[in-house]
Length: 122
View 1: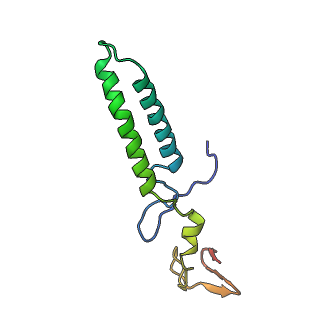
View 2: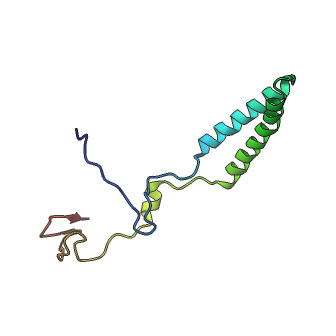
View 3: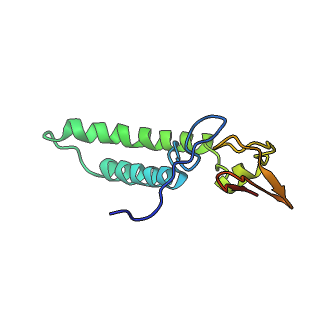
């Protein structure tokens, strides 16, 4: 049952999807830092019993290390520009041929129309 039209966008320069985020987003890094801080405080506040000594010490050391890695990642990553900002740097198409059927496009005021397949380039 079709729910609408789907299209896949690919960058003509790098070939990647411009809507896809590869890096960890900053709110998740802040959440990871908060969780590591809470776990570190909780495990340092608890007394270490013999049954859970390995896990206790692993969390006592691992949680602050995870928090430090989250801080380093927060410092290194900057706020990415939005898709609208990225698209503003792309120059409009200036070719006179239709990219789909190869016929010369007719220029009407500020738009170009393909007489063969009716594609409109504004």
